[in-house]
Length: 367
Image 1 (cartoon, helix red, strand yellow):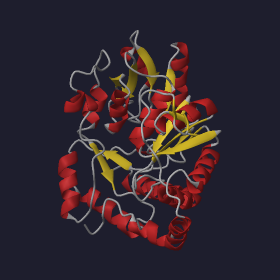
Image 2: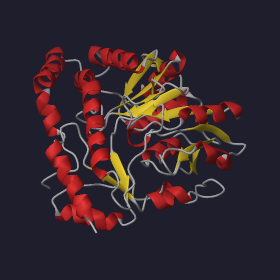
Image 3: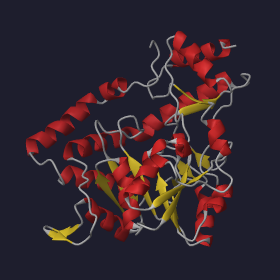
Image 4: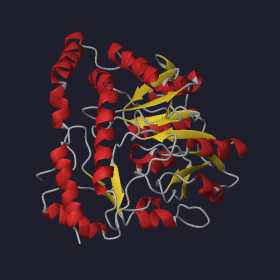
């Protein structure tokens, strides 16, 4: 592609000397698991989010599972999950022995719709996982109000929202606990897999930390049944620490490019641009538009040498892995319509204005 959907290499090249030094520091020390780099990164991450503690783990999927386990969610429980999200959000629920229940999303923001939560309630409902989709925070305040009313726990999935805010507060700090991913394409991405659990409740993070270390409270003291082996290695922690120093700047570059898109694509027939409600500031992990002829538009862009993607082409209710798992009483019609229309345009900090203008010109040419 002349204009790829994503490109990580320019961002790496920009900070390569810092990355090289961080990796060399780990290699010279010869300490590769649960060492000082991990400890330092956890402290920096907790400070970034303004919470008391964080624990690095092996992946975002593990992070969701461990956060649920720390909350005490397990067999016999149900967890409300948006039908429009990456499958790991629901897969992690199943790994705890609990069952996801799929809720529909808001027709404007495509994040979990608080007005649809009551359709998913049962006597087994224990928790809700709002996903801050595409970098836009879900309506967590309304979701928290519902959760408090029904005595439910809230775990925020922050895999796509590093640095997003709700009324000035970092996304991930409104619920009881949060989980995130450091998959390389994320706003804060490792150079391999990784994830984290964080909270202002230090006891929850401590339990997640112990569960991630085979259920140990001390060396060879295994207390928790169901503990797993999930570690953020020292090299990834060192890399993430460098990346975290540059995250605010990279997020600002993403927002700048989103503004360019907004301005250049405003008024294009049949094209719906992403929304950002008052008080909810996104970080544009993805820039997702909607078009009734999405597939044809995508082929048109491809013919022009422009990459794109679809996040996500199926509702979770249509995934074979989740066959038989229930949704809200009125189904998920908004999600089912959205997955036919959504299209992710090129979005990364080093996308040039010239490249972005070519993307917009190609969209405007589409008939």
